[in-house]
Length: 174
Image (cartoon, rainbow, N blue to C red; front, side, top):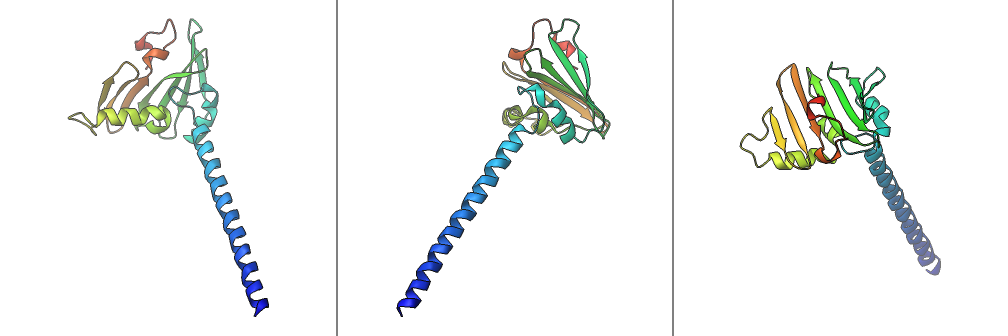
């Protein structure tokens, strides 16, 4: 009888140890994935250093074309997606993505391009009469989003007015 209760105690301790190890493993994987998702792409307001990772995530085969502005205050990174859509990411000399623009037959992944500003756009749009329609025209002090088009012809842009570098005109974001 004593041997039986001792074996039960050992099994119970092993089960607790295994459960703790599984919990820690799941927690560790969850933490890793959360960090990976946050760092996986450049987005509006984010760090411009990860534009190449963004290109890979959007499955664009060609290298990103870089065009410096005439006054040197920003660089435009242009990528053509497999769908034929062109995405331009505007990065200030400080390394911040202050604007994104797109044009082509299909909309790009706006959640990826706009990052946390995408949810802000959706929340603001939900109160509008034409929410969910093809056209978005939001002009706020912290975020401007203009997007529209029809099948096979979409264009838009989103930018952070407070992050625009000196010398750039809003019309230059296209």
